[in-house]
Length: 141
Ligand code: RB5
Image (cartoon, rainbow, N blue to C red; front, top):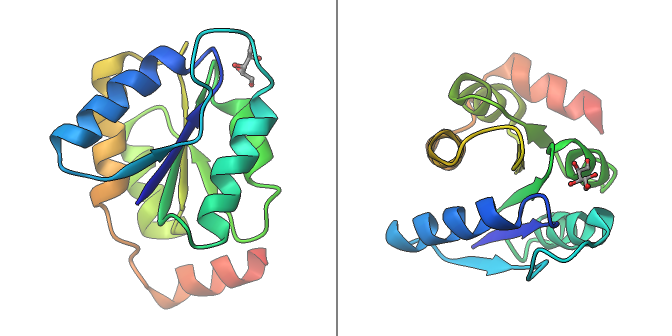
């Protein structure tokens, strides 16, 4: 199960991503927000981050205007490794090297086509499990 959340800056892109997840047959839980009305992004970032940290969901996707605010908030939750990605190389590398469990996107930064490809790369790339990467992740805790 994938946890997904946004603020008003990410609402439109979230609709596109949820449609894409459905087309792929992937199950998600939408933690809001549920309109383009102005809201406080920390509220939604915390909900998604805790759903992943607590094991309710395997991965998270967070979208705000820049992706920065939600990634800062998510990374304050123990066990969360949130990565703000603007291209597929970053999405692949953060899965292989950092075992990132939350993807942050900027709805006002990247186009919808690229965002969907980043989501697919993030979801489809496995952690390398190489000793040096495991060691570095353990050093984060
Ligand atoms: C909201 O205007 C904006 O600050 C938010 O979407 C995000 O970009 C914060 O980092």
